[in-house]
Image (cartoon, rainbow, N blue to C red; front, side, top):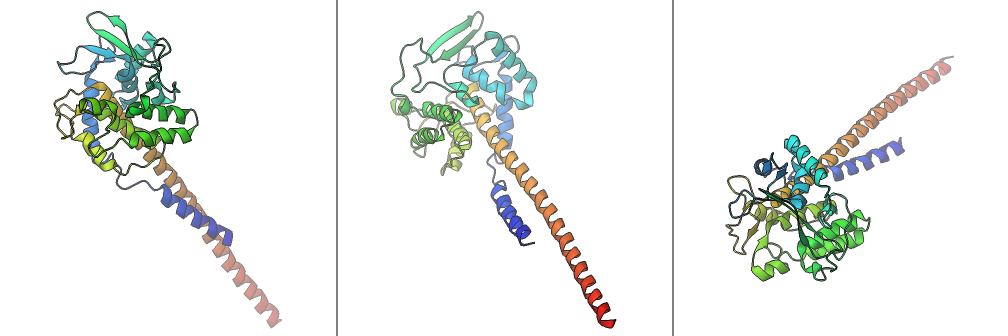
Length: 311
């Protein structure tokens, strides 16, 4: 009996620890996420089998295999037909890694990463491109730790390599670029434009590594204040929190990925919590049965003793 009581207390504490937060960040932005996914789905061109870079006229009709379509093929859960066609097109081109973005989905990359080289894989009425980082460039990017996104991809790669010590180190260095407006890394320092997708990437890596972001609420506000009427999110913004920049598929995909991962984590926690509750109920029933059995045994013992006294 005492051992059962100890086990029940332990399970109650565990269940409380596993209870999903009542303020899941996807909640306030649920409708915004639907709009964003629909925006990304509308960038799909059936004739090409890929999502285009952007619907904005300021951007040439370009289709990036990675990262745009690699990510889109993972996050268009409510448009599975499109996701399947994108993945089939990626298989057709046979380019599924670029030395960077595969880290999002379990891959390991070279650190320091190589400098990028843009490769045109198809050039007709439309252009299909990929930006690759490999030893063909012959040069490693020595200043990579001054880029928040490269640090975060490095963190993911080290996590995939089962080295969470280095992963958290790189994550913390990226997080340290936060300055209330956004991530003040080298590119932003040079041109003054903050990059929205880096905020989503920081959220994603924080969840993967189970790290906290004390400024997460403000970070999310920064992302969603730049959502347009068509559902897309502007790619860059100024320190005064204004933007007239384009919305693109890469930004949409990374924001969706960040929230999709968080939703999966919370769903897993919820399932674990329900499992713990079921175990607790089973143990409670066992306790009741044991208590009743003990009471019956006691009554029987008293009755037997009384009978013996009468005899």
